[in-house]
Length: 270
Image (cartoon, rainbow, N blue to C red; front, side, top):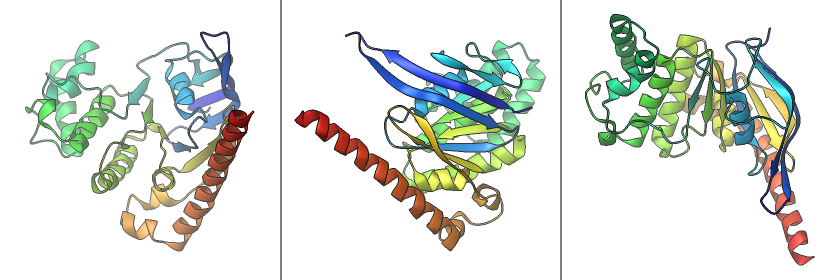
């Protein structure tokens, strides 16, 4: 059984002027348990719409999504979400943020304390547990967000541009942390990104989408996520195999962006 089964998802947004936007068109996708999948594409290809449907925040116009065999009809504790901004409780400490979910579900205090301490150690924040979140850097806040998500023990984790707001050096360190946590917990992960390099490095499978309406254009099976567990990221990203894949996908995205711009100019001239 697939961890996530997407069967014919389409999404049409109705606009106030009686117009509509066809965001997704018959998306079919099966994601295996424990697989890490990255989704990439030009602006307007429906990446975030797809993720919000998988998470249960949106209901599709057509088609169904099942997680662990159960149809997704709304948000649920079996699905965790990490946003581009941490969406943390800034008035709480790091430890209080990470323990919030387990406390709300009534997990025993002793069990929660031990689990939270382990997670803070894994994300390198064991010395910051009593710090209020607003005192942390952006990269540290995203580490808190990852730990908070894992504390709820979801079956699958969705990430919407989780590293997009970070500087280049912090972003690369966080990429390695994502792989470390993926291996440690064996979660199924779907990650949306605008970075071709990030999508290549983090995805066992990379899905490239095309816009208007959003469809899956190509899928790539990749070795780099597994390599990233033991090899230096810079070494991987400088390898001929990685560079070749990056240039192929960059060209594909560039061509789609050019077509979008050309179509927009044609519509404007008309």
